[in-house]
Image (cartoon, rainbow, N blue to C red; front, side):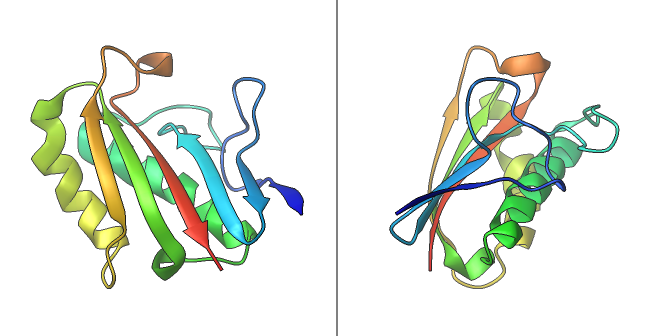
Length: 124
């Protein structure tokens, strides 16, 4: 069974997609930009942007009744791979126990000029 997940604690989708979709016990969280859901603004710097992107991911996970240990895989998109170490330092704090599988890519550009975008796949 397919169920759409939407959290008011994460920014609304900026296109024709859902924040997340749960299908047969697996949650697919769309890429989360570092947009503050209250102000609509993005913080400055890779550390603050990584923190905001992951805060948005975790708000959606929470809405679905999931948490860090339920995340199986993430994908991190960086505007500049030179930000890898700084992103990793923040990222590690969100997954203190069992780390999910992950890929990380540098991309030529992200929506709204973001420095990072993070998605996740989680299961019950």
